[in-house]
Amino acid sequence: DVKVTQSSRYLVKRTGEKVFLECVQDMDHENMFWYRQDPGLGLRLIYFSYDVKMKEKGDIPEGYSVSREKKERFSLILESASTNQTSMYLCASPWETQYFGPGTRLLVL
Amino acid sequence: AQKVTQAQTEISVVEKEDVTLDCVYETRDTTYYLFWYKQPPSGELVFLIRRNSFDEQNEISGRYSWNFQKSTSSFNFTITASQVVDSAVYFCALSGEYGNKLVFGAGTILRVKS
Image (cartoon, each protein chain N blue to C red):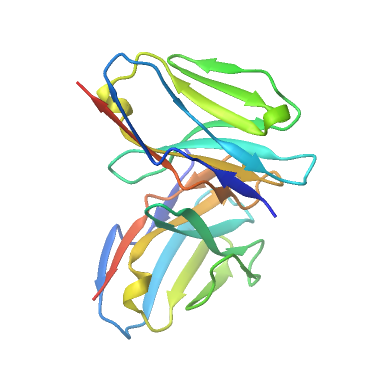
């Protein structure tokens, strides 16, 4: 069965902290995506990657960076967390359809 | 640029009522893919359907049906005889390429009351 996992379901961090969100897929897919979900805005693309060590900015990359050192793992990094980054973060890896991870609800205090 | 509009922010129905969720999209691509996802309170996105731009046939899956009309750029979703378990946020999404990034609508919150 297809699997996309995310390291945490819930996270609470302080303003200014460096935050790592991890995503792992077991499908040997090349493409991986990070989205952010906010009420009334749907999901918006932050960053994506088509291959190891490759990354592309999405629609809202400001305040984020990513890392893809291995094919199965795609990390989203909040360099200095801010309260406006409180959100639900979803990782996806597509093939015939987009397989989503369970999401990480991040609260920045 | 691609865009997906779900004009209905929230819909409330009573169990067993039929309900239609609207989705209108914009794209300049001739080949594209349309999706519907369900997000129950648990938060996980559940894939419901994918439709490519060359297939305008309507689809029915149990109580769910989808109406794709290229002439009006719409991909509407109907739930027949709604149930409380259908309560969720429903997202319509668009992709320009197979396996590529999705553009999502804002979502429609569906509340089904018993």
